[in-house]
Image (cartoon, rainbow, N blue to C red; front, side, top):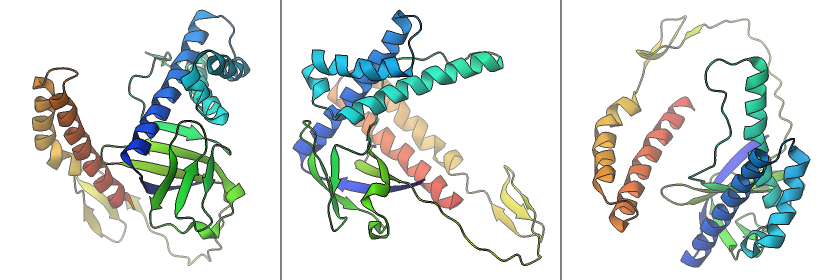
Length: 254
């Protein structure tokens, strides 16, 4: 499975609709967790059926695509099954009891509720949330893949913008001829890695270098009044700085 990510562009009304879709996904997941807590013997299929009940009782839940509702229920069951597995394995300490999600940053669609443009430059979400057509900007060429290979589409909100992730079902295989040469790698904290030929790459330590400014930004958030506009601005600045460091680390791994 390949996951390609594109930056999405749309009007402020569309981005607000994305926020509403994410909030609805969080509501469905948390409602499924509550059902599991209150009713003994709830299984995965019961949570899937419960999505239809939520859609019938709450108009805003009905506006979200049915498969997106099912994907939110799957997220709830994933946390529940992980808790069951930890209990069976006898994992010491906390077993990861399912918790209600406070901050949700994504909503996932399956094979319906969206339509990719023929030129692969935009995507249109067709449910009743009103997201509509979003322009896509990225470096990946989607013309190499068929539409039916796209199994999931995620809308992800980050500090800077909204992103669209496409999960593509691809069987990748590479024919590599062995050269007969071997190379050993030693990954450490002081050095990023050292190979058996003596080549050493220094650890960039982006997090360590950015800790000072992160702590300063975090203190600014703590000093602001909760639920105020200034606190919201400070949180967005903090999120942008965390995102920058995570991207630096990801580029280093590549």
